[in-house]
Length: 473
Image (cartoon, rainbow, N blue to C red; front, side, top):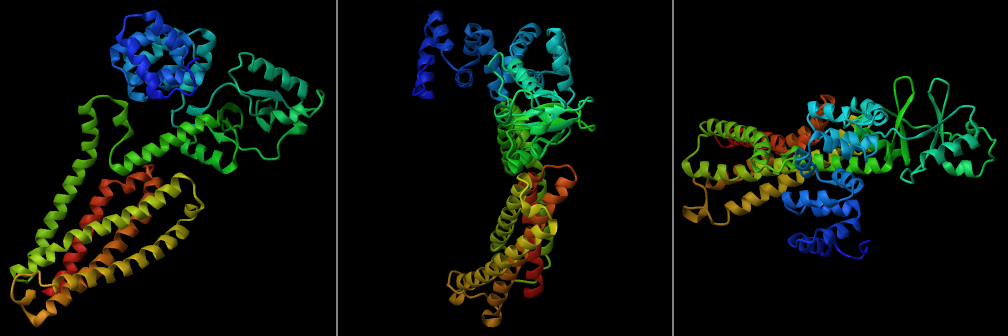
């Protein structure tokens, strides 16, 4: 085996040297010593033609495991080069839940043909798993678990453990007790079996608490249950409480990473789909579909500003000064809104007690936003006074014409009050929109993206100009 102390960079340099040569036997021997995860890392860094060469030299089992571990975009490219028979050979080496993950990368028609080529016993396990969406508990669960009848004994459970772990690839976290209709009664940790006699009924060893997931539960809800109840595995049941499969903690680690990435993509105004393709044009189109509506929104905001500016009964110099403070007000409103929405979205994603009651969350954030708005207003007004009295303005003594400086005070009031109101409006939107989006079945993380930032900017600008009209006209 490759030494554990060897870095990924050193491993890749060795692989690169072997790929540049023509000794396939040396390359085969090197790959045979690598873990499937290391093979996947190497395949993601080489050219497509080198991937094909690597796959040709790998043992079938390692090929299958490496393909599952590849990044989605790379895995799609690899599978595109496989015919139906080659894909089915890969699936034969995989557990049913991993096989379904690979099938999800294929077109439905191709996936159906691949499944038809599987051995009957594997097909019988794979087919039921395909009916569930990949982002649900049913899509995450594996079909391998140990269940014993309600009247079963410790000896029966141990025999089932030996059967399931015969190939040394399965880890048993719990034994599940079921009634004659397959309904779940409870769970038993293996340690309780070890300390009990062989004739002890399993039902007498059941844990007090039983936590389950419904097959249609969203994967984020499943992740939150693992974190809340600190379990190693979670049984998935149907509406009759019959056990369908089991989700293990390693499955949930993948979900946590996926959900975190998805939220980051939405907050940045893009989509995970961008990283499922190697096409630059496709990636640009995904970003553009988020940004172009924002461009339309900014033009609408510009139109509103132009229309409102026509009502400002000010000389040219005053208009320039008023519009100069438009950018910081709009920006601060947007920044404050992003802060609040990020806190709320994070709480929703982790099922934080903060958001268990909407009123509690809003009351907390509203007090924080109000305090920031007051502080921001005072700082902005003082900053405006200092700036306009500093002599940087054209004209005598750097003062605005008319009213012997009274207009400067009014501009300061307009800027300060507008900034405070803008922060309050942006904060209010940021507090309520994530909850509204979740109620509508939309990812709350979108509430921190460019679309909402654009709305905050436009509203902040309108508030400022309306106040400016009222105070300075």
